Amino acid sequence: MIELSRHRVLERIHEGVNSDVFLAEEIATGRKCAVKVARTGVHSARKIAMIKHEYALTRALEIPGVVKPLALEVRPGQAALVMEYAGQSLAHVLRGAEPDVARALRIGIQLAETLGAIHAANVIHKDIKPANVVLDLETSRVKITDFSIATVLSGERAGVGDVRSLEGTLRYISPEQTGRMNRSIDHRADRRARTSVGTTRSA
Image (cartoon, rainbow, N blue to C red):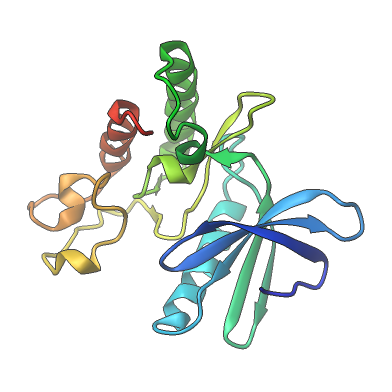
C-alpha cells in the first residue's frame, strides 16, 4: 500500500486496470479523501502519465459536479492523485438495489447538467459509466470522476485498431470511439454513454 506525505491510506475502494483508488484521510485534519494510484508494472510510465493528465485537466475545471483534485504526489515509478471524497461509486450503491424512478431522474438531471458544463469547457470525458459516477448518500449529490482518458475537444478521430486497445469501457463507449466508423469523436460520445448508464439496470 502506498505511503503519502500528508495522508494516511485506510482501505482500497476500487481496483482498476491502470490504477487503484483508496480511501484515505489527511493526517493533520482527519478529513477523508480519495487517492488514485497508478499501477506499477507493464506500461507503468503510461499509467503515471494518465494520472498526471487527469490532475492537470480536472484542476482547470471549476465545475461543482466534477470531483476536485487536491494534490499530486509523484515519485520515481509512482504517482498518486489526491481527490476530494465525494461518496461511493454509483455502481456500488445501486448494485442489487430495486429500480427507483425518482432517484434515477434526480441522478440523470445532475449528470446532464454536469456533462453540459464539461462540454462547454470543450472537454470530452470518454468513459461515462456507473463506476465513474460517485454519489453522496447524505446529500444525494452526484459527481463525475476519472478523467484519465478525457480530452480537450479538437476534432479527435478514432483510428481503426484492435478492440483490446480501445480507450474507455467497451460496454459504454460510443460507436465512433471503436474506430469502426468514419466519424470524429465529440461531446455526443459522452451523451450516448450517459444514455447507456441510465438504461442499465445494474447501474
